[in-house]
Each structure stands twice: as C-alpha cells, then as structure tokens.
Image 1 (cartoon, rainbow, N blue to C red):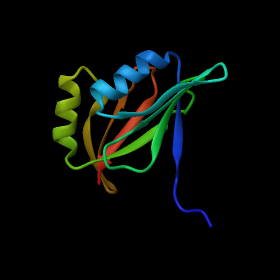
Image 2 (cartoon, rainbow, N blue to C red):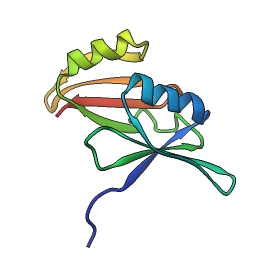
Image 3 (cartoon, rainbow, N blue to C red):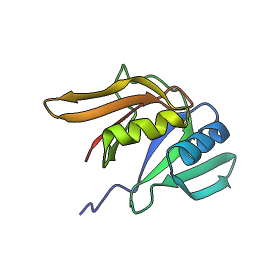
Image 4 (cartoon, rainbow, N blue to C red):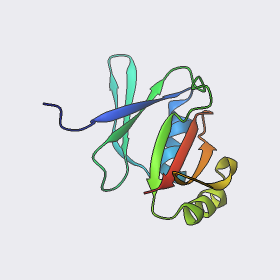
Length: 118
C-alpha cells in the first residue's frame, strides 16, 4: 500500500541559482546535494515536512499557466510581504477566491509557484 509522497521534482535551468532561491528566499533546507553518475541530485525539505523537493535539470515554464508547485502558508499576506521583501517576483498580490486565499510568484527559473492558506 502507498504511504506518502517521497519527493516531487521542479524543473530548473540552473541548479545552483535555484538552490540559492529556494533556500535563501523560501526557507527550504538541503536534505541532500550530491552527484549521482553525471547528474547533480538536490533534494530540499521544508522544516517539519516529510515530502522533499528535487531541483532537476529540465525545461521550465511548460505548465500552461498552472503552478509547478503548490505550498501552504499560515498567513498569506504576511508570507507575501516577507517574500516580496526578499525580492521574490509575484504575478499579482494575494487574492481571495471561493476556495481560499492565495498568491502566485515565479521562482528563479520562471516556474509558477502558488501558495495558499493552509
């Protein structure tokens, strides 16, 4: 029986640039950063979370306007303000929809990332 998601991948053009963005601006911690054969394998983890995020070389921005990653935040407005102060580029300010409050931004590689109250 399946138990949980181990990791998800986000495609990146530049792994070092993406690593700096996800750690310095979003607060992810490095779980592993190693070379496996000819590939650099970078797994990140939010403190307290089980699921990890892999920064994997590949084409970015091919999600047809759908987020490559969806995250949860305790407070959308406070998180938006904090990330903007760190230089994160937002597509628009936080919005309230019938399903909840959320905001979207671009990562260092051009991937659309969404976070909502959760």
